[in-house]
Image (cartoon, rainbow, N blue to C red; front, side, top):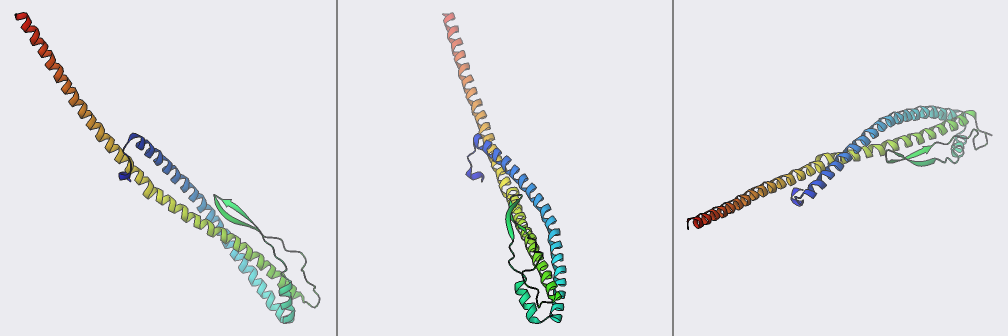
Length: 224
């Protein structure tokens, strides 16, 4: 970068300002990254808990399903699997976590009563339908937490790359510019000082010669 910059005092001031901006930006990004890492590990716990909950309710739901198939007719179980779920609407909004846009999913409460007639349907089949409703809720919760986890993980990687670019490329490049400008300015200052000394010595030499000439003239006039 040093070869592309003009070695002037204004450029030196601009480079110092850029260096401060880059350092401040790196510090800000590192604080953001640290905050995101803390949020990430908190979400890891939530994601593991959601996965564990899904595993638990799934085991219970399949146990209920096997019981329903054993006690009720396959036709009743299949018809209930289609009628029991109904419309399951999920309220999803977008929230910001340290500047990262992530989905916020509100899981709706299940209706207290099923949307089907219990006639000719056994209690075990009804229980299986309710249990699989819990499985659906658990799946939505897993999807919500793991989507947040993935988005924040991607942002942590992106922020780390930006920090590395600033600390390993941009900031060292600005330091090189500053050193280059200072070396050129120092060299110019030394050359200017040397030139001033030469000019001063030349002027003093002329003044001395003029004084000597004046003294010689004055001495000659007095002798006459």
